[in-house]
Image 1 (spheres, rainbow, N blue to C red):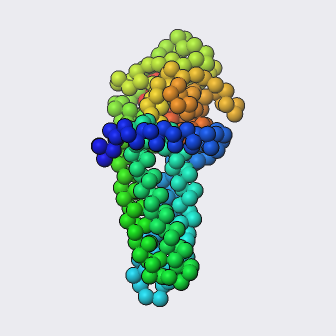
Image 2 (image 1 turned 60 degrees about the vertical axis):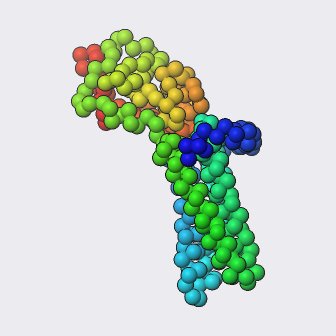
Image 3 (image 1 turned 45 degrees about the vertical axis):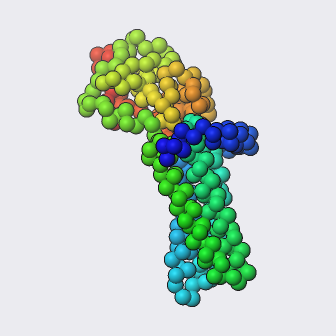
Length: 279
């Protein structure tokens, strides 16, 4: 896996594919839909449960007598559902860093081989060649399982589409922390402060103050250097790195590539001092 991360030769294909994906999925609302912004959770990992479950069930039924029809039905279901899951995965992949895209490219290639085997398996089963269909199905499961392992490396080792900022919250000590004088906070402008060496941003709107983790959950971009924009009637901070947007009143993600909301801290004002704590 480390060698794949460092394989710059993959960039030639990866960079071209990234441009194709971004050009094809150009409308922001389409990208947000596929990222899972509306769900508040990455969509691709949820979608792959259908083909994976269907294909594993197909393999089990193929080992049992009298289950040809059920196995064929599940094989078709898994193959058809894998296509939209792959589209969502490509959308996520196009927003990753270069070393992550290298792993993701191999992940996608392995799954594509698996999908091709399963498409052949479906064709064989529907034409009555069930022995060939079972063989192709097991080959497809092998390729898809390899892709799943590589996908696990992408998520758990490289942190792709994982909330990058939430670990910052665990570094804060319990209790209330003074962060700024209320009178020193400008109206509707971002101010960066620290709590236990954890960077946070403050945003004042009238008598209310939002305290939010400063590192973007997508790729740890500095939200404190981002712009404040009015989106759908809400003041939002837009990450300067990849354009993820978060509402400044509740941290809800508005635009991807982040599919995760940003963490808001509990706040209060005591004797004119804004204090914050872990919610």
